[in-house]
Image (cartoon, rainbow, N blue to C red; front, side, top):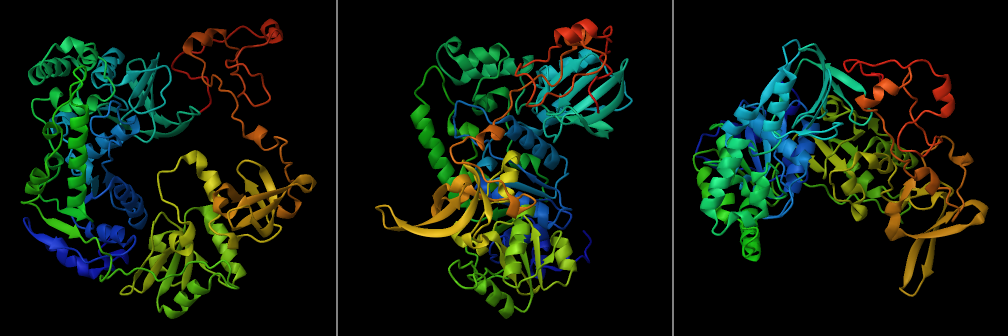
Length: 619
């Protein structure tokens, strides 16, 4: 992103903050909506890493998504929360550990422009940076590889040996093939060996086992945030006996670690694995400014109150003794003392009075003759350009059709940079921004679905990719539907929307959606349950086949087929036919493993033995 780019010309008032010196404390101007992500991306355009400490984990995740869309050239890394309460007896998800280790490695090597850290996460004591350096290693194409030595290294790093790699922290060795899923990696890697040389390294899809793209090297981070090798376990046992009174053999945590097992909740014993722990500030360069996003002091105070309360509640269990909070977390005083010698920036809680202003009320008014009259009035009275953002490509198409019904024709927009470079008065695109804003100085406004459909706004969270198709056609307001439009009910299937009806079922007058199904069957859905209705996305809405209520037509195709063995193990290769079996479909046998029929056994050719270095599946 060059200094002369349109993005760098935004918010010129922030240029003064980029020249701040260590020890200075400065307050940023207030910003509204997702303007905070814009301001942070603008501040991070220099040579120094910017560390953003947010008041809650939700804001950290939101900023990560929004900054990636506003300024895709910036390397923004999120240090996620463990998503567990202090002293919980279960461990964080492996994907969270993977992302944490990747972020710590990136910021320790200066490979990040922005580090996003929730306030509660910033208080946790961490493994020292030397631990990551000692337990990280690389595999490169063309170099020699001793498989037995690799097994030992993977075990020391905490990786689990499995038959099929599916999640971070796993590996598998099958003859001349080595599958690895490194911590911090988006996809697993398949290493093909020619004798003892790495012939090729390719990423692959863990579900289909198909190759995605080749790479030249693989970085392997440790699988945990603490060492589970013999040295680490010995240090844990010694420090455990020094810290806690009584017979350690009665504690299951002590016995599990002694046996090389990482018990659930072991993360809250992390200081016992090291002579000295580190903090977030030990990973950061001295020149990195710290930006406190919203009410960070209040968040720290609330976290410590909860930590002390849980320690008092759980501290009496002699079979599972716990460390005092001071050994696990930074105190509020220690946290702010660590900020003393650094550049400290603060983003005010109030969004009013700054260069980024909030939008007026532009919500759709369903019962009006023109539901978009507020939005039209804003566009007519605003001298700049307007960008409307939908949540997905499907929602973008829905909004485009909705606008067209009321004489609005926005130009299609690819991304934020494309909007800045264009001169379209009204544009429509997709983006992850949670809230809109107005930037009068730059002459543009950003409108999201949260403002258009204020009455039905949904909280943004991490979405499961399997729900993406449903989200594409999600309705945000009844004004998007017209009578006779086909719709899909999540439980009853395809019906036709006939309009709104009012009924009194003993709780006063209530609005219902009138849906009509095959054979004239009727279904009335309360408007409050609009989230169970999606738009029909078929080719010809007029010729749609309606489902029959109570027939099970909708449930049968939605049932998940039984799992099958997608990749036969090496022990099955000598018995396989010369061609691999066809992929099982819903019409095949319900058996969970592939087995040739008696006719095939009698008529097939002699089996072909597939060497381990030649996978039988197509790539």
